[in-house]
Amino acid sequence: MSAASDSLASQLRPMRLADVIAVSRIERAAYPFPWSAGIFRDCLRAGYLCQVLDTPAGIVGYTVISVAAGEAHLLNLCISPERRREGLASGVLESLIAGLRSRNVSRIILEVRPSNQTAQSLYRKAGFSQIGERRNYYPAESGREDALVLALALEPHAE
Image 1 (spheres, rainbow, N blue to C red):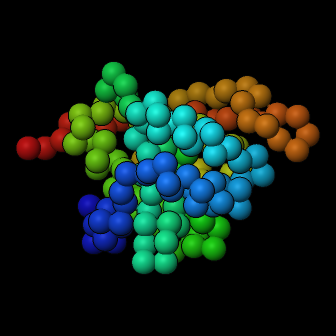
Image 2: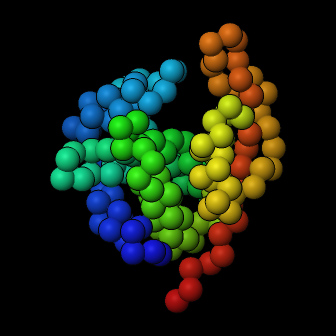
C-alpha cells in the first residue's frame, strides 16, 4: 500500500446509521439517479461492508461492498464532487483491495456506466478488466443505460 493510501486507510471507518444523512447528501450531489437514504440503511442492516472516508472536514466519501463466498461486489464508491481530483478515490480503492485481500476474497466485481469514463479509468488503473455487460442496467435521462461488468482477481494475502 502506498503512503497516501495508508493515510486514507486510517480515515476509513465503518459507516454508522448516523452517517446516512451525510452519505445521502454526497450521493445526491454526485449522481443524477442517487440511492435513497433507505438503500444505505438497508445495506447496513444486511451487513454489507459499508465504510466512510471521515476527514477532519467531515465525511467526504463512502463505499458499499457485498462480500459472500469469497467474492466481493463493489456496489458504490463515491467521493464528494468538491473533493474529486485529489486522488482520494484511488487511495480508497487501493485500501479496499488490500482489505478484501486480507479477508481472503478472491475476486472483486462491479458495474460501471459506459458513459462514466472517469470511473472506468480509475478501475482499469487498479487492474480491473471487463468481463461482461448488463443491458439496460442503469436509469438514464432517456430510458436506460447498459453497465460494463468489471472484475479484479486477487492473489491470496501473503503471510
